[in-house]
Image (cartoon, rainbow, N blue to C red; front, side):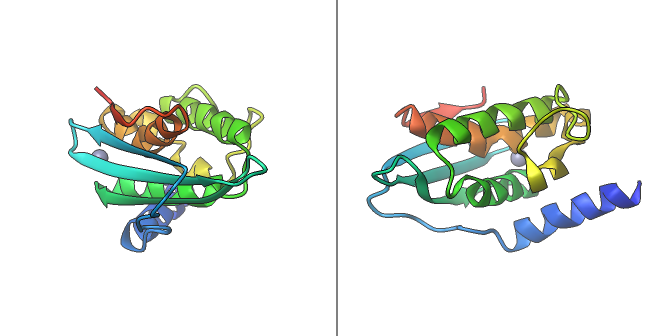
Length: 150
Ligand code: ZN
């Protein structure tokens, strides 16, 4: 394992241990519930959109493996302050990254720290864990209440 892979693993472990924005938002603008039945990951995602169309707050709660939880935690941080259009763009980039279609070192992207998930495509069973929160957040914006990775 390279030093970089180890650094990435540490970021994921740290977010799993101390997830950011792990709470319920009462009266959120959008809420959706997402399942990954293969792994047992199950989250609610809460999104607050302000009058200017920007995402003011994002939170999640539920249960999941380290990968799904770290991804949800980092997603909440990445989405706060973004417009809905930027959020959807970021979701598309993250999805491509998780599937191995986007190389964060070569392709234009706005992923920033989320590039820690760049090796996840080598573990196909974990890709759904990594994308669950993102899939759920997008569904929330689409006003779809409940989604499954299957
Ligand atoms: Zn999982």
